[in-house]
Length: 158
Ligand code: NI
Image 1: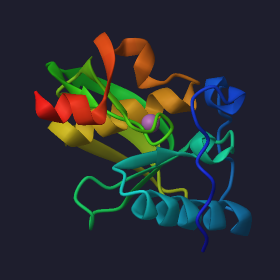
Image 2: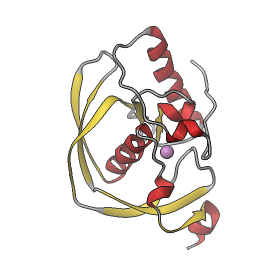
Image 3: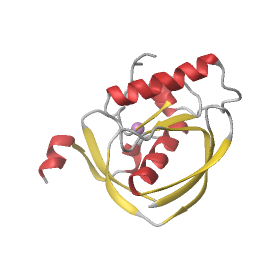
């Protein structure tokens, strides 16, 4: 278990497509464990493998601090509704901006035993799933911001 270095906007690794995970090797398991350590250390809600420099389709999410979710090779099955709200990213420190996302999403993914499962999320979880899945295709939320990308302190004063 270790904290990994979080890559920041401008790093080309954040703009690349990730590869599917074929099997859970000890190396992949270590990566997942490290991603959770890194997520909790940074006080984040989600982290995708390219954010620690690895181009694999792996996402970790925890919207409450005690509900860890791993999504391996996730695929969107269904979305509905709409929500607009502030979003941030550990790869874009100190910034925030308004992004519109589906309010509901259902995904198909694999867990750490490569068993497939479906996950449904609404509100913050739906937002986190969509945000992290964008990372797997080389996209950052800043591309989707409506209006200006703001400093977090300025946004909190509004
Ligand atoms: Ni992000």
